[in-house]
Length: 223
Ligand SMILES: Cc1cc2nc3c(=O)[nH]c(=O)nc-3n(C[C@H](O)[C@H](O)[C@H](O)COP(=O)(O)O)c2cc1C
Image (cartoon, rainbow, N blue to C red):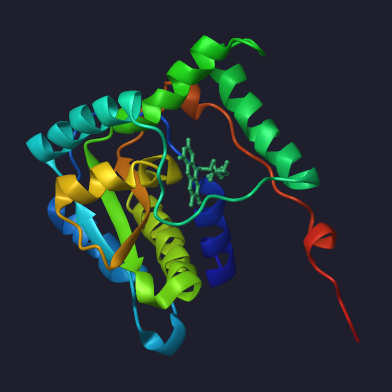
C-alpha cells in the first residue's frame, strides 16, 4: 500500500458517528490523537486551538446539563452562523439530512421526530467523551480556519486508532452555557465540539455514508 492509498483508506473509513458504545477510550490514546492532530499547518505556526476533553462522570454531568440548556435556550453561537445555504449547498444539506432520517426511519415531514433526532446532538449521541474546541477571538476567521484543519486531523487520527468521532456545531450553538460550564475565557471563540468513542456499528444512524462532488465540480484548471 502506498502512503496515498493509506491516507485515502483512512479518509474513506471516517464518517460522522451518531451512536457510540459507552466504553471509554484510554486517556493515552486521546493524547496520541491530539499530538498527531497538532501536526497540521497553521498561519505563523500559531497553533491557535485549545481542547477541553471530558471523561467518565464529567461527560455525563456535561451531557445532562447541556441537554437541559438546549431544551430551554435558543441558539447563541460565538461565531455567526452561515447566512444561508443557497443552491447546491442547500441541496447537499438536505440530502445528508434525509439520509440520516431515512436511516433511522423518520418520515419526511415528521417534524417532531426530526427535532427529537436533532436533540441527540445534546446527548452527545451516547459518546463517553466530548472535546470542546476553541480558538482565540483575536485571530478571527484565520484562527478558526487553522482550527478547522486541526478538527479534521483529530477525526482522522482518531479513526486510525479505531475511535469514531463527530464534529458538532450544534454544541457551539449553546456557547454561553458551554462557556460557563467549563469556565472558558471570554477571549476565546467556542467553535465546535467533537464527540468521540467507539462506534455502535449496529445502530441505524451509523448505516449510511454521505457522498462527495466530483473533482470537476470543485476544481478549475488554468494553464
Ligand atoms: C464543523 C462541523 C460541524 C458539524 N456539526 C454537526 C452537528 O452539529 N450535528 C451533526 O449531526 N453533524 C454535524 N457535522 C457532521 C456533518 O453533517 C458531516 O460531516 C457531513 O454531513 C459529511 O458526512 P461525514 O462526516 O459522515 O462524511 C458537522 C461537521 C463539521 C465539519
